[in-house]
Length: 467
Ligand SMILES: *Cc1c(COP(=O)(O)O)cnc(C)c1O
Image 1 (cartoon, rainbow, N blue to C red):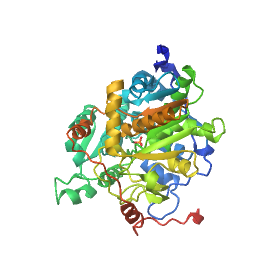
Image 2 (cartoon, protein in one colour):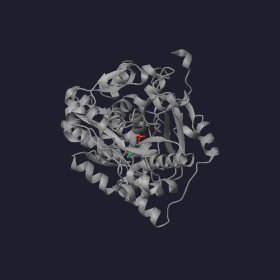
Image 3 (cartoon, rainbow, N blue to C red):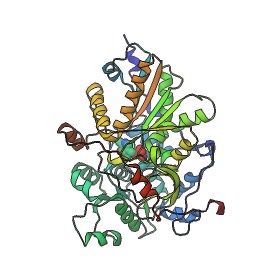
């Protein structure tokens, strides 16, 4: 009989981590700076601080190995949903025919947050730092709606205003997300809207324009520049967001130790902009770099339809289609890349976090990709076994975890596999319905399309010797 005390490992609210893990000083090669899109030179502090809360800009470039989590913020995490549980996926293991204790699958359950994903970890932090700065409104864009919900919740905690530009096609297809955001008092606009110059140019031509993340970012940035009481907020990609997410990995380390495990053999997360994967893996990547666990395998998982790391290029690119956000060095498919309409909406970004790019380029982490039909199937298997329907993004991590477990079984190896359960899929039922009705298809991004997008003369030319 399996020891049930190790089936679901909970921590006391007092055990919310006291600091964030900053990987920057441990990176094998130095982190590249954020570049001002106007002149191709590193963005000065004042410029970044006009866009983001000041404390976040300090964290973005900090070389301190750890950064304290303010007491007030820790209290909010503790009062609401952190630490999150670590589950042993015993029923999934049984479904996979894994016998005995040789192969163990654990997952860190970020789906229990107020909005159903890891996003509030950084949303609450950003709203807190904005409040400290005397900012009274945060504005952002959202595609699938997870980030917009997270930030709406974060802002409501501190009583600051939140405005969200939501890509119109999602606004129409996911009414539940819109209602959730409005229940936290957020202003939600379908984008393109008539409230900004950037949106109006599209809206006036076609009030039913389906929108894109690029247009929504332009609208949010334009809105944020209206007053110095307003800041723009990002839910992934940048260093400080990955930093805020490291509570996930730190908690999992304590929880695994409680289960008698010094370190997992394999750490897995799905990758959109790279923040939930970073949050789980950064503490493990640091131990790997420092030689404490040199053999640990760390895998980020992408959709075959949007493989920024597996097939993209490590180069300088704009953070957004509108070329308003800073230029960063990252694995990218090119900012003009238009993803096919796959259902893992949160994994459709053209690039990936510079931290993830650096670690991949230095061979500390690996990447894999899977087809849409295979990941949704893995999600159903997980739901039947463990009882929670995952977000389609999360299905990518589950598919990889299952593959790794079956490989270990075939090779008769002992393995501890840990993956991040980034969110539940209760607002994403359409994807599962389409699978059930046979309307979902696989899509592999053709190499010619990637080359076309990367060879676009519109890609930024940055002279690294100038800084
Ligand atoms: C947003 C989101 C993702 C992808 O974003 P990352 O920044 O790569 O984490 C993955 N899973 C869920 C549930 C999300 O909401």
